[in-house]
Length: 207
Ligand code: MD3
Ligand code: FE
Image (cartoon, rainbow, N blue to C red; front, side, top):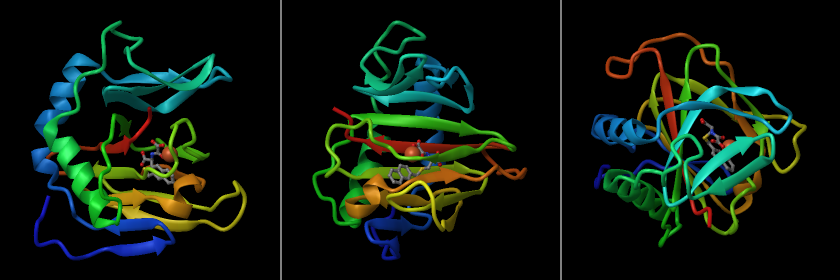
């Protein structure tokens, strides 16, 4: 987090990019502590396909997918225990980024952790399993670069590419909150601390 930060790029209405807003070196240890409790796993879609992205969660609620569909749950189905608490470093980062983009009072109760290796991608989708769409989603990218894309309220159409690097934060609110979006197939590269991996943390008000 940077108190002198003043660089906000509005990619489209409601979508604010805060380049290098997060100091990823301060998030690495909290991330490892979370994953020691709720390890990464590959979820299965309702159609039975394994997702190439590995995921976990922290906070009061965690996003899960299985043959029954997508939803938020309080108990990690892998461990049978509650998800690990959201680290204060995570909560403070998400809150300050959200208020920077005009969403004061954002209190995330879920953080979805996505782990990408080279060759991994995420197809176009909407995030619509949360209860209150007036609340934004805050995305934090760590590790190697990825090309993110945002389309709009319909699945089809022209996409806007956005290259996301280590420390970049994006706040999606207002009209952008329900936009279709995804991540292009990750190119191989190496980050000095994270290795050949990209992490994405998405902070949500799920419940
Ligand atoms: C736009 N994750 O976890 S973050 C996801 O990089 C997801 O792991 C991607 O899409 C990733 O659902 C992209 C950016 C993002 C997250 C949520 C959004 C963009 C969004 C919700 C609405 C609109
Ligand atoms: Fe998404």
